[in-house]
Amino acid sequence: MKKTVIITGASKGIGAATAILFAQKGYNVVINYNESYEPANLLARSLCENGFSAVALKANVTNRLEVELMIKEAVYKFGSVDVFVNNAGIALQGLITDTDEYDVAKIFDINLKGVFNCCRAITPVMVQQKYGKIINISSMWGEVGASCEVAYSASKAGVIGLTKALAKELAPSNITVNAISPGLIDTTMNSLLSEDELKSFIEEIPLGRIGKADEIAASVFFLASDEANYITGQVLGVNGGCVI
Image (tube, rainbow, N blue to C red; front, side, top):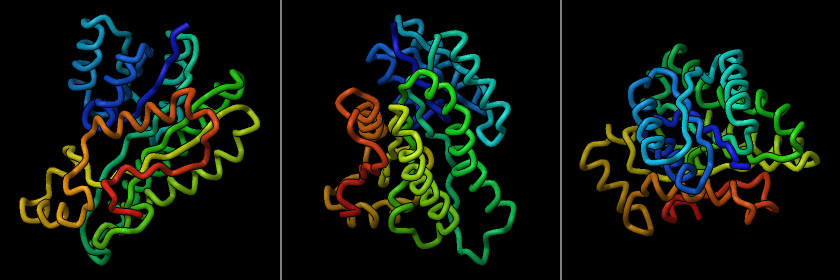
């Protein structure tokens, strides 16, 4: 039977690249979205037209009931959920003194509470199966912190803590929980950087370039594969050598 993966925030960027790779590798792919109806459904339709198995399902990761319904729909359609990728996230830049309560609440709701909601909802399914792979997308800023991105860094640090704790909790049920910690990746999230900012950042990257969404997708797929069955509670840095 084909395995099934749910990828949150999969309409573009890292999420879309991950959805495409898993589809090419023979998975049933659930492309989660919240507001991005058109690109998510366009991606699902494109994959299906090319002979792959994919569906787009709407769920706001900050809403526990919507997440639970999405998982139920996936199980009903495909029979199981073998891999869950927590990719949905937003960025926030600015001085801490210019960051209002609304912005802080929003970034923690999506980046951390959203991951918590999804992990909590998928756990009973995977425990019953006695198998599962949960992969959370954090950030290198969650490891080392970024000036003018305090709230973002804190939310992604929380994802790392959640990953390590949940890995211990679910290991007896043959469920692994790991995190990917990307560096600067060529996505729309980083499109707001000016040319000078981008050049300055690249000069600090030992490999001398920004990363590609496909490279993060490949790392996610590795952690979802049987080759990574003995890896859990780990943070895999994919950052061009920025964090060593």
